[in-house]
Image (cartoon, rainbow, N blue to C red):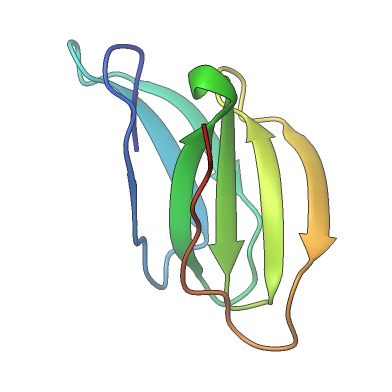
Length: 88
């Protein structure tokens, strides 16, 4: 995921850690570890203030995009969650 000047999302893969990067400098702004067996989707939410991730553990997690701190977790599915979308 790229932060600050450009919000995006995408599939991540077997890596359990998601990172937010500054689009201008390439600096890593935050790391969000947490999904067992990999993170498969990540999107910005809340006007870029939050990151939502989904993974092989069936959970959807919400993170603070600036600090990487976990905000909440929802056990969403018995199997892998491959995608996420936000409205608004």
